[in-house]
Image (cartoon, rainbow, N blue to C red; front, side, top):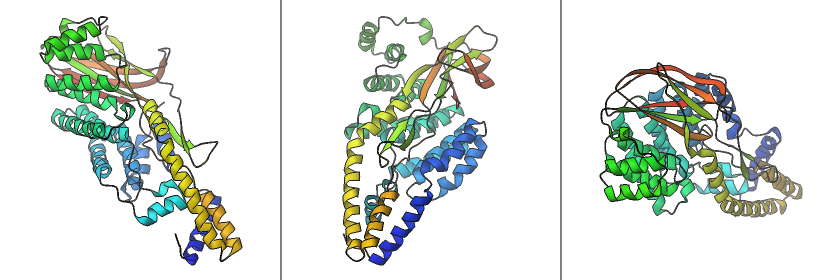
Length: 415
């Protein structure tokens, strides 16, 4: 590998200076926006992220994901969908890495390689689009995203992705969307696939029993009844005169990528404390009060994904050290001092790749309640682990429930 000496000298000098001054990382660039959301100013976050999301470079996808999420939190669903759709197209594009980018990532750092997103993040794009469409009552568009989720699921299964990468929430959400469309067989299949990915979801027993019966899979229905003897089947599950309110609760903040204290070239994920751990649904003029149930742990999925990537990251960094040694030796043969400087500068410039979709929540939880047709006011209250109020809440919202209809509402806690 032979580099032009004059060009390498310039690169070494630039990276030596930038290394000493401290280059801005992805995490530092989005920190102001995250703080704005935490302090109740999502519009400021949107303004901070927009120029980053619009810049066409190797980092565009990761900034688009955070930007689209910030728009959702700010209540601008239309623009959020535009950003998520753009991110979906970008994530699907065939990888193209120039020789200079690959060489640069070895000589300098992994952040020079185009960000393509983890598997569970790519499926999450369609789940977020579906949540947006459900929030504004566009079931047909949500159904499109349910099909997209299934397409990705089949592809990643064929690629032999691990269960923690397959994003059980997205599959569970698609099941609810099919059920809302009264496509009961599709709903059952999606619930069953969710169970294969993550059988620990506490509500799946009743979902599988209900959907199997609605799909008229009576033998399967009986099998699930035996599998979950503790589930109390209710006649109201099959009462077409009733509707259902479904709360999709995004709780807290997922873990943040940072450089490891032991090896600055490697990223680690550190949990972010969230006071609000659950949500309580209170329906006005009613004695109905329900607490959310976890259906997906984003933190666990992210940590498992990074742990699974450790072997690949180690191999890349070993190759990077070898590349640095070769390049600095080429310089040293012509100029001893500059060769030593090249070695130091390239190692200073090397750092952990801390890019991630960092605006994801810690967990996703749901509340589901069947209601007779009518108009209702409801509110959501944030709760600690001990079920004490945190002061974080979704103010009173009015909804109309119709017979046989599912009504969806999305809420995000950020403290």
